[in-house]
Length: 435
Ligand code: PLP
Image (cartoon, rainbow, N blue to C red; front, side, top):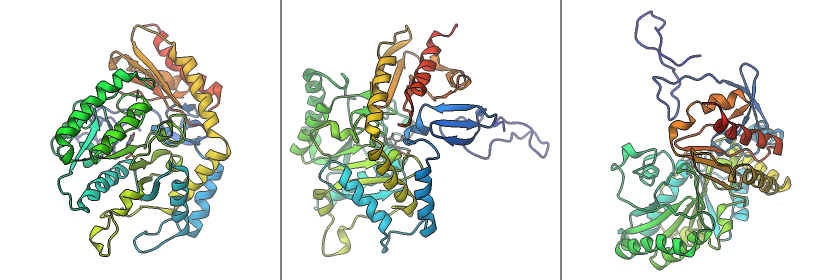
C-alpha cells in the first residue's frame, strides 16, 4: 500500500499517512514499493514473486541467512518450554548457558555478561556500568565519556551523547546530554603508519592529561566505524589507546555491536588486537539477527567493583526482556553453527572476493573503496550520486540501501561467491550506467 497522503476514508482532505511509522524516514514523502512476504537463505521474496539477494543482512544482523531450519528449531524447542521468564530473582538454564558460552568465546578476561534487548541499550548499560564503577569507589568526578568523531553507538539519549554531534545522525539533539569529549576519527586504514597513530593519540594524551580526572571511559567501535562511513582503522591504534587509558585510570569500552561475530574477519574485532577492553558490547549477530538482543560483557575488575555486603553497590539496571530465553536459545545455536560450519572460512572467501571486485575499482565519483572482512564499501564524493540506486539494484535482483556518501554491502555469511559477485556487479554497474 502506498504511504503517500491521499483523501482519507471519511472523504476529507486531511492526509492519511501510514499507520506504521518507519525509521529514519520522511513520512510525508515515503513511498515503499517493496514488500517482503518470505525470506530464506540470502533471498528476500517480494509480493510480486521477485527474489532479491539481501546485500546488507537486514541492517547487518542476519548473519546465518533467513529461515534457518536449525535456528527455527532451537526457537521452537525453547518456546515449548517457555518463551520468556524474568531474570529478577529467577534463574533458567538457557540464559545461564548462553552467558557461559559468551564468556568462553570472547577474549580472555571478559568474565561476566549483562543482557539487554538491543544494541543501543547494550551501550547504555556499558556507559552506566563505567560510571557506576567509579561511583562505587567513591569517585563522583569521573562522569565524562570520550568518543571518536564519526561515532555511532545507537539511538537512545545516552547513546546519542556519544554519537558525533557534528556529522552523526543525532546532531539535532546535541546539547541535551551530559558533556563529553571527542577524539579525531582514526585515519590511515588497517595498516596506518606509526606517525599517523602518534599524531592521533597525542590528542588523546593531551585530553587525558588535562581532563583525565573527570573522564570515566572511552568508547569506540573497534577497527571499523560503521554508520560513521565504514572507516577502517588499525589494531595498533587500539593497543596504544588502551595503554593510555590505563595510565589515566580510564576504562575502555568496545562497541562490537556491528563488528562482533565475524564481520571484520575474526570472531571479534578485539581479536585483531593485543588487548582486551574493560567492557564490550555485542548485539546484531548475537542472535544471528533473529530477534533483538544484546550482551554487555565486563572484566573481573569491573564486576568486582559492584560487590559489597549491602545492596548499595548493585548495578542499577534491568530491562524486562534481558536474557530472554528465546534469544538465548537462538544465540547458542547460532554460535554452534558458526563454529561447526567454519563461518570464518566463508568470511575469508567473502573478503577476498570483495577485495578483488572493489579495491581496484575506479570512477570519477569515487573517493575511496574499502574492504574489511565481510564488509565492502564505496565512498562517493556526493550523496546525490546514488539517488535511485535502490530501485536500480532491486530491478537487478539485489537489495542494498546506501546512506550518506556510502554504497556498501555486508552480506550474510552463507552467501555463495556467485551471489556475492552479483551484488558487487550491481554496485559497479550503477557507476557504468548511461547518464
Ligand atoms: N552500536 C553500533 C556500532 C551500531 O552499529 C548499532 C546499530 O547499527 C548500535 C550500536 C545500535 O544497535 P541497535 O540498533 O540494536 O539498538
